[in-house]
Image 1 (spheres, rainbow, N blue to C red):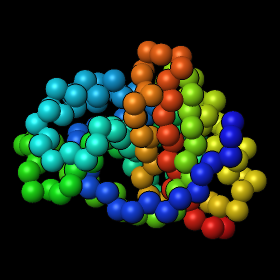
Image 2 (image 1 turned 135 degrees about the horizontal axis):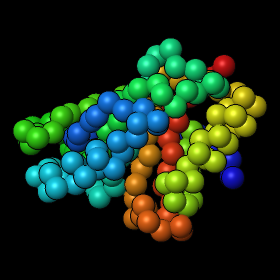
Image 3 (image 1 turned 90 degrees about the vertical axis):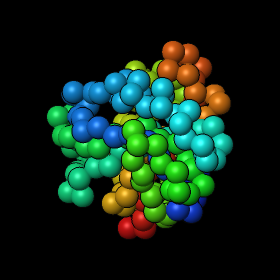
Image 4 (image 1 turned 30 degrees about the horizontal axis):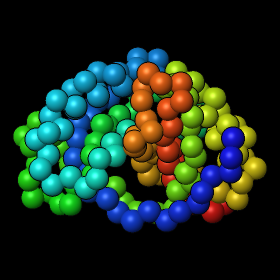
Length: 161
């Protein structure tokens, strides 16, 4: 796996739907099935990228990640502003900050390899630690949940040690 790009993200306005889940009780498919029919109601979207975003507890230890730990899972799209929010959706302002961007290639079922690389290999040997901000994946033109050649960007919030 290639080294990540380190970037400073500007704040983003996002609209979507959320659900509480854990990896052991994975409701990702349910979240996206609930979001996609309502996406067309968003009239002020920016681009076509979708965001799969996780909000973890501030005390979560990624070194010993427990698959039963619950977190917030969002399905989102970026918008210019929050002036028109469909009643079926919620807003999320993603604050800016430093992120490491990794590229996951392959099916979603193979994501554990990417997760392990980030948290067990790259992060301990880097000059960074996890910052308490949302983690997210950008699902762009090359993303397909059924294609083994699928690509998605994995954004991990970081700060210097």
